[in-house]
Amino acid sequence: MVVLTCFFTAGCTSDFDEINTDPTASPGNEFNPNYLLTTAQLAYTGSNDFAYDTWRANLIYSATMMQGMATVVSYWAGDKYQDNPAYTSAYWERAYDEQIKRIVDIVAFTKDKPEYNNIYQVGRIWRAMAFQRMTDLYGDVPYSEAGGAYYTGILYPKFDSQESIYTDILKEVDEAINAINTSGDAVTGDVVFNGDLAKWQRFGYSLMLRMAMRLTKVDENLARSYVEKAIGKTMNGNEDNALLLHDESGGRATQNRNSQVLLGDGGQENYYVKWANTFIDFLRENDDPRLDKIAVHNIYLSEGSKDQNPGYVVGGASQKGMPNGKDLSNNPLYRINDDPSYTTFPDYSSPHPQMISRTAPTFIFTYAESEFLLAEASVRWGLGSATEHYKNGLKASLTFLSQWSSALAVSDGEAETYASAHPLDMANALTDIGNQYWANACTSFNFYEAWFNWRRTALPALTPINYINNSTNATIPRRFPYPIAEENTNPENYRAASAGVTGGDLLTGRVWWDRE
Image (tube, rainbow, N blue to C red):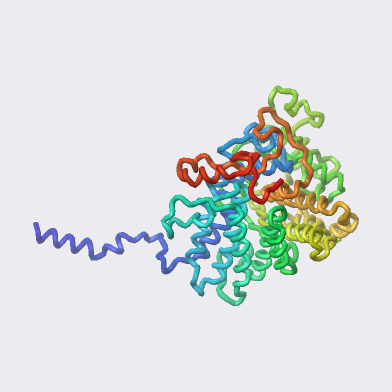
């Protein structure tokens, strides 16, 4: 028995490594961080768990609070100013797991490896952008210790102050841009700029500009210093727009996240979610060519149907936005049927079908946004020509529509004519810029950015909704409360962060840069 035992033991252990090695796993020495970059970029457009965070944070809350979209769907709490903890925590729950871990992994793996210099720098830029959105949503958040448990063993990361986060992400972007070597290693997993490192540098400077301008109310000197670094180096045109083209073949994992929701995959959003009247009226009052392109009505003719009517109506004159803060109840104060605008649901304007196709792009950062920020910096500090940057931004916010689809295209000539007829009013320059920044964000479905910039500038001047049992005393929310789950999983750090929120850990609390 002893001899047989030795025999079988030797036989089993001779190929132990082969038997116990996962043939589908990549050994550390063969790991290519480019593949992980692709995943991290796709995750930034929304969770592959049926647009979980996009549905709640970008659409249910940001889009309706900013009156870009409106709906009577009862669980859309955004324009009712109601706190639904399951929805306000959705971005935190998905982003740390699907975005942050992956991009932190890339940065940690490629650091101090010259053969991966460029993907390391790209990773730093992307990591900074991912954390900017996270801290803009919640305020103080885990940053320096977040996503690195594999490397540090820290399972309960501290919450860094938003001030320290902004100081560091600005430094990170600045260093990364300058360390990119355009003749160095190829970034092959990049599905945003396809490895074009010159575009990455211009994108990095545009991101630096956005980050810096966020600080105008709390640290104007720091804001201006980084803006001055970015001037002359930001995006050159719509060809530099940061966008991700989606693919239908991969199902939920690769399809456009906003589209999954607005096509009604999870309910009746296709029939009941519309452009808001605030947004549609703004375009109409300004004779804006976008109205003739992005809005249609009679696209869904009956509740319960997912079929789009091929005879939908395009054209600004007949478009009608839905009022915010309405529902399907019997209360005449809120019931949509009692609103003077109501005729039928199909009569309200929906996004053009090319904007909600499953292969539609997700716009991450546009040239127009960059130019509007430069215009604001010019007004504030005399840096460059405000009128020129504003005109560039206005034209680009029209012509970029062709990147949705050729069916939405506005020609360069039309854009030039419109922008020349609507120059920046220097007496109301910040208002003009803020309004157009919002309109561009709504048109690109980047409602996060519409909300963030509104909190900083109070533009556009939105009229708050006073819906029954709202959580904010009829004021537009300022931030998302921390997820309650953090109290159980990271209690000490959670309690300290919650206690430090100006105005309390509520929808009405304020993040550091959002001073009154």
